[in-house]
Structure formats: C-alpha cells, structure tokens
Length: 59
Figure 1: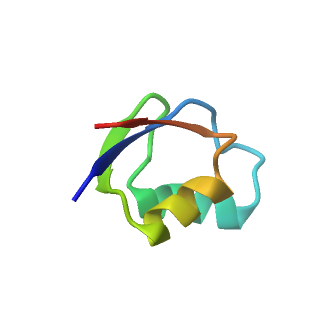
Figure 2: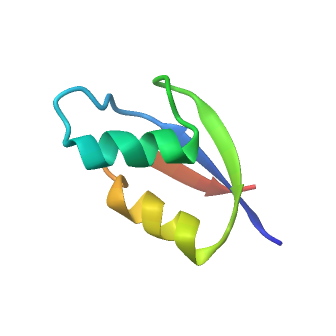
C-alpha cells in the first residue's frame, strides 16, 4: 500500500480541541515532527481536517 508522510508545520495552540485530538491521532505531538501512514481514506480524512497545520508528501 502507498505511504504518505505527514509533517506538523504549525502549532495547535489556540486551535479547537477536535483539531488537537486529530493531530494526536495522527501521531503528531511536536512541531516539525514527521510520521508515516498508509494512504487510506480514513487517514486522508484526518489530514483534510488539519491541512492548515500539516504538510504532506508521498513516501
């Protein structure tokens, strides 16, 4: 299955709790942290919810 790299590029301070929880569910805890996930519809949906806080690239 295809992989996707997700990097947190903006802080979650002063963001709604649901966005903070989405970042945590993606495995992102620190600014600049990079995680790798399978390219599934559920992961893509989570990324879409916080696309203003993260950057993505194909792995």
